[in-house]
Length: 160
Image 1 (cartoon, rainbow, N blue to C red):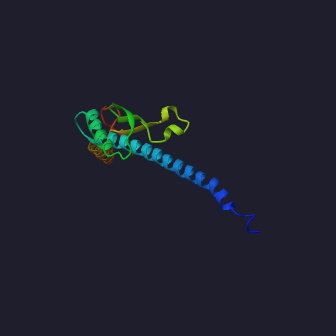
Image 2 (cartoon, rainbow, N blue to C red; image 1 turned 45 degrees about the horizontal axis):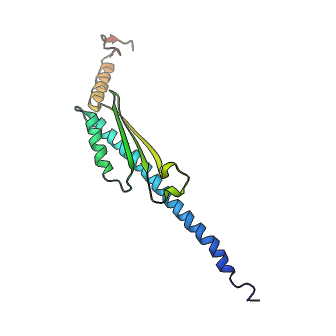
């Protein structure tokens, strides 16, 4: 009876081991992709945030320098990195496009064996000191019985 069942473990292992190796490799590739996407999104946001915090100066150059410094710390290199930094009076926006190219990605059904990654970070420009001063002026005006008009007009008395 023992001779009839000889070799069944070898047959099962020949199906299970390649499937387990393939799934492990696929999970590793997916984790590299997710890490790179989150890293690029974080780098874009941090560069935009740090550029939005400066009071005076060229915010676009600050965002570019911060982005370069952050991208030097990348663990997984990306190809064809394109950056677009836009600064408006209200916000700083950093957009990135890159391709993630890893060994053995050409085996997957991908265009050119690389994943296209897009990342965007946006930070609003806020003048904290100006905001606090404005709120204090508004509070003082309310306590005095006056209300500041929104368009910079003269104060008017409120009926309390």
